[in-house]
Amino acid sequence: MKESVYVPQVVREIQGFFGDALQSYEKQPTARLYLYDQVRLLYDGLQQGLECLYSLVNNHHPDFLGTSVSQLKNRHWDMDECKLIIAKQYGFTDWKGVHVLDESLPLPFEQAVQALIYGEKETLQDLLDQHPGLVQARSCFGHQAALLHYAGSNGVEMWRQQVPSNLPELVWLLRDRGADLHATMQVYGGSFTTLELAKTSAHPYDAGIAKELEAALT
Image (cartoon, rainbow, N blue to C red):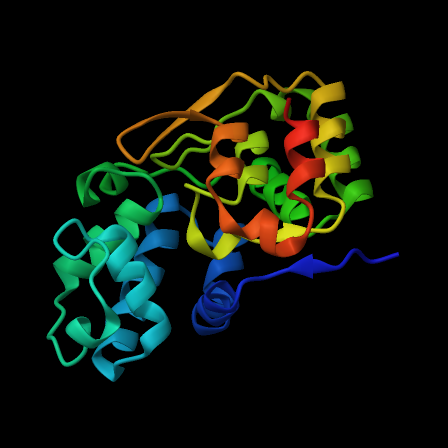
């Protein structure tokens, strides 16, 4: 049975805009090239004035945090700004942190994240069976999130901030495999656990599973 997945409208629009580029980690030879593809798409989209992309701007560009869409319209955006926005979305201070990523993305970890956010329990179980170290592994991106942190729907890349209906069950699976509830990730200028991130995210509440998720993370 395929799980239902709550996808916020802006997340859905961002997923639709970037399309296959978000899944190209299986094809790109380096993590840097994977992110640079997104930079080029973002640049083109901002030139067209696509409103969903302003959510990336006012969430990640330090000069425009919280700025309204109306204030961002009709502004010229250059490639360096687009590099900064993508770098920030993935938890880096700036593009210099991305530039050194000359290795391929760790495929099992990326596949496990995808299985988690789409509620694919059997796939996640299989990946954890094949790669037991995944539950303690950290993302190669700047935020260095563990798998469990993606259950918070907050602080990680925006296009992955979605909530499958069986997310609490998947959290228990990760716990049973040794996930650390007290592990923190660096975001928003501080260190936060998955529970802290989940409590400050609207998405689990909008998905109707906030209480069950918080119980699983406690």
